[in-house]
Image (cartoon, rainbow, N blue to C red; front, side, top):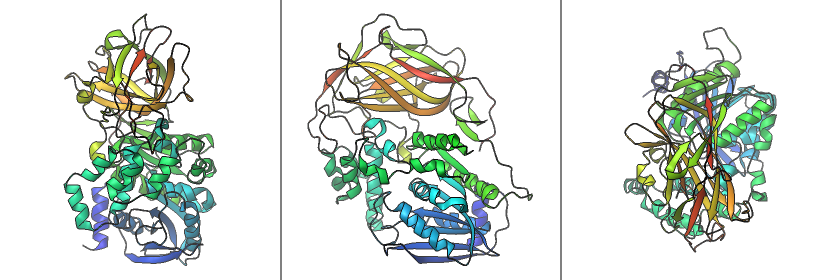
Length: 557
């Protein structure tokens, strides 16, 4: 099918602004040489006509598939699209080492762009997931020539997402390592493994010690996986050259951020938004009902990104382009929700404590004298993770939690049916008072929406790894554990109930706590132990929800 027709059909399917696509000239496998002599393979989608802005995409996932479509869409709209494979991937030379070379390679690529006869001096960048990390690595060095950025389910720093709550995001990291390795194996072999349900990956997620999990999943040792198991402490110098959060405030280009409520990088991306806002920038933020790989996410990102380039990369025009939209557009989940436009994130809200009470009750009234609740966590049969923010879309997002809530190692606290809707928009946090047989443990907290049929749908959650050094116990052995849950925007409908789950883990989303304090990568001894959750006036365990007033819904994005 001719490229021009593909671009026209894709634009119609994605509900993009109507254009008359021009001819596109494609040059593939251009060698771009870096300062250390490595050749980065690059594709160039050139529009017809005079010099035009350039949009750069740097990726470790190959230059085919959706990126070919994006290249044609950009060029058909009168921009140069440059799509480059990161070193060690997609035919580029060198060895892929996540985050290590992206700043230097990005700078060298920008220098190459500046020497091209079609360079206009205006640069835009687009990136999903790791492609966005590569954007942030370069953005501060691009200076005033960087006119617009589109950052999709990504962030400037990955360390805190990798070790959320100072645990280890095992499912995300190992699944990503397996995905990258799969790009190097024959296509038929990969299809067979997928058809079988990826049994090697499933076995690897349960394997101990974790230092052998990469070989179980892929048959080879993955250097960065081994490094991430070793360099997990917050003070690790290893991460200083691999995070770019301290450079975000220097970026002056307009940035649009697109993410989802069940994305693995949501908290980190919102940190970037806050940093830009504090520096005086006015980024646009779009948060939808998406996971990291939701089918609708890429389409929404294209619509947002191409419109953003129309407004900011090319400069204002009077040819019917839409004006700059509201600073924040988010999807409010739950019955009666929908899309909302807001002036800022987070919106004004009343932080409202919902206290844990005896008998599994959740209520806003203060706690009364009570006996602690108790459960036993056994890492040989770890509490499983269901849905939520995961890398693989088909396992992520909202699911019915009744199966896991029926386990003896999960405590639940449920409100009475609501007599009026409750809208929660913003950061969510819990504060628990815990006593444990073992000093090393994990505390997992999840907020659910229980519908009229009794189904319990996860809304947001979080986990914290407790160690004696980070959370010293008081003389009675009680530890106060603050837990930051994923932010959310959700409407709990009349007749529904709020539910809080408390467990000792969520495996394999987070690596199970062995209960021994052994090093992350080499732990093999597993110890079970009881935990108590206190909820008396001296130990008011609670979930704190940012409750807002009702606002009208908007049409779909």
